[in-house]
Amino acid sequence: MGGVRHFDCYGLVRAVRAELYGLPTLPAYEGVATDDARRVNRSLGEVAQGLQPSPPQAGAMALCWTGALALHCGVVVPVNGRMNVMECTVDEHVRCQPLRAFCKGFTKVEYYT
Image (cartoon, rainbow, N blue to C red):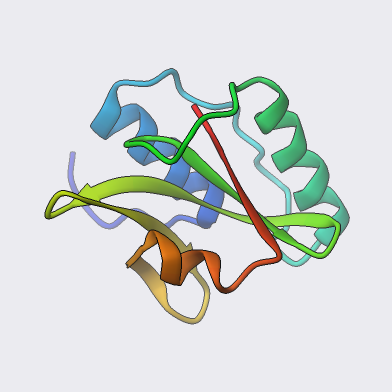
């Protein structure tokens, strides 16, 4: 029906994977506050356990680690033949960055399909 949709990082990943790539919809984690690091880490870890590790490829979830915690995620999308990561942040809103630039902001980035 159109209109504006509001996402956190995980909500964006869920929507892009399902709507653009036809992948199964990931579980919903409503009520997990983005500033609750333990719950975010636990929820993202549960999602990753249900997926397969993969190289960066279209539709893959990019699971981002800050130290020992998974606190952010994005989704891999091709732009002009190169792999980029689309993410949603409170400060930057939705943006797309080349893989290398995206990964610089995290301790580690893992990919899952």
